[in-house]
Amino acid sequence: PFGSSKKSSQDEDYKCDDCIFPKSTMNALTKLLQKVGDISLKIKDGNNKQQTIKGNPVLVLSSTWRAQQEFITDILNSFKGYVAFVQKQQEVQQIWKPHLDAFFDLVDPCYHATRHDEIFSWIRDNERGKNNHNNNSSNKKRKRRTPQELE
Picture (cartoon, one colour):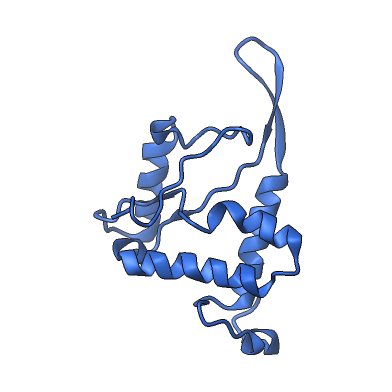
């Protein structure tokens, strides 16, 4: 979904003061958020009752940008800039609305290893419901961390 490594004329035309990512990258991330939100699974709960779990995408920042507060703010401002750029696309605005002010979480900013080890560490720490991040119910409010909380 992230396209080729070649610059397209569409990306070259993309000008947004607060955007640090190319439009093609933002479009691809939007598509991923949409697809995860469209997923639904039917499972049986502990009482053997059928339950539907709907996709509930969240963004967890794992790049080294997580270590600098101003970088986190730059990313969030870029998300807002993208949404402003595509302002006439209501569906895109709805997809991005929960992600504009805060990341769901960060990989530990003090832990530096290979990227896959950092991500695996976060998954391991959160897979069993630590921090209540594993709740996939779309009607429950998710705790999101603002840039100030992430300091």
